[in-house]
Amino acid sequence: MEHAEHGFMAAAIGLISGFVLSIVVSSVFPALFGESGRNLAIRINFLLIIIGVVELERAKYWGLLYSLGYFSGLILIGRYIMESWELIIYCLIVGLYIIKKVAGKVGT
Image 1 (cartoon, rainbow, N blue to C red):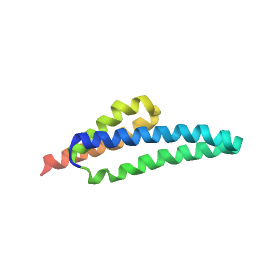
Image 2 (image 1 turned 90 degrees about the horizontal axis):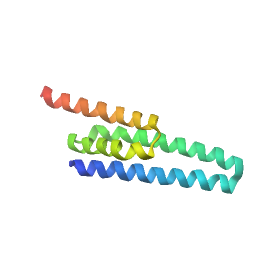
Image 3 (image 1 turned 30 degrees about the vertical axis):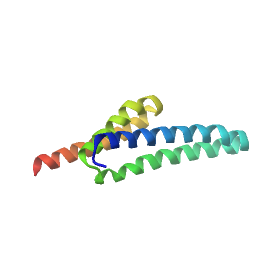
C-alpha cells in the first residue's frame, strides 16, 4: 500500500469507524447502566483516542505517498468529526513523520 489513495482510505475508514463507535458507546452505555455507564463510556472513548494515537506508531513503516494520503484524509475528514485537540495531535505526529521522511530522502 504505497499509494496516496490507500493512505487516504485508511484515514477515512479509521476516522469514521472511531466516530461511529464513540457515538454508540456514548449513547448505549449510559442508557443501559445509568451513571456507571456514563463513566464507562468516557473511559472507553478516551481509550479509543489513545488507540488512534498509538496506531500512528506504524507510521514509521509507511511510504511517503501513503503518509501524504493519510495526512490529507485526516485534515479533510477529521476536521468534521474530531475534537480540535485530537486533530492537532494526529496532524503533528503524521506531519513530523512526513518532514522526517522528506529530509531523509533529500539527505541520501
